[in-house]
Figure 1 (spheres, one colour):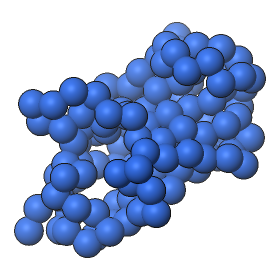
Figure 2 (cartoon, one colour; figure 1 turned 180 degrees about the vertical axis):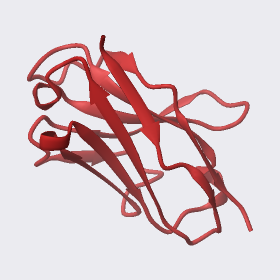
Figure 3 (spheres, helix red, strand yellow; figure 1 turned 120 degrees about the vertical axis):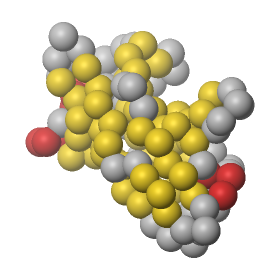
Length: 122
């Protein structure tokens, strides 16, 4: 069974840091591009970041560029999102997701986790 499980969300003060994790199972994790997507309360989905199969290349939305870092540990089948200098507008449910295709960036996110909630507030 293909499965993604996010964790690490919680309450953090503005300017603080948080690291999210996504545990993958049921597929060859190292063969897929992975993504982080978020949804603020009452808002639509916003793509946050993507990482290639080997973890050598990460890309980011302008809203998080310079503050967030995506990474992966293929030996542990785990995706990470390090979030620094958090802002109230970062408050959202954060999802990890897997690309539809092996090895390549297709851009269609075929598998999603259940999400982990990040709240940035003083």
